Image 1: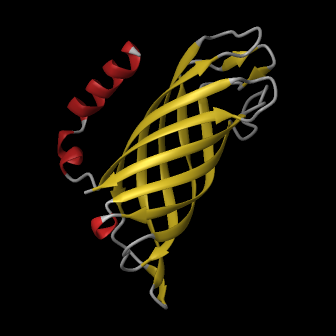
Image 2 (image 1 turned 90 degrees about the vertical axis):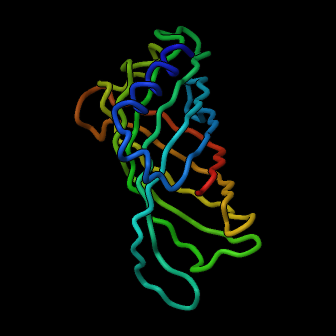
Length: 182
């Protein structure tokens, strides 16, 4: 947990101008669904909206945002090589959403980004080849509250190095995500 606090402090100091323009902050909890991997992930993130709408029709549109996150994985796998590791990710996310969220507003999203891991394996049976990983996810959720300030979602995420280096076993997570939008 100390690594996570130090990394958050470095990010806050390194990006003061960008932090002023933050559109949201998120918290995620995930659990691996991969065989030979019993891993839980905890992440905090910052989001920046793109302010662009595509296919704006019928009260719905495609929009998007940048998602910068920092996480910690707690590893309970058998024959583990690392009890925990740190994950830093940056993902552009495309979201199908309502133009003016009111009440409870559903959405669907997809994202493909990059992640840097502090270790290249969690166990002898789950090796990633390198600390550089691609992370893709599919998600659904609901925005609610005054002006849609709250966002509760589910994501299925896969991380792997995309075949850049062997072994490339990757890992999958089921994630719950809570976001507050400013």
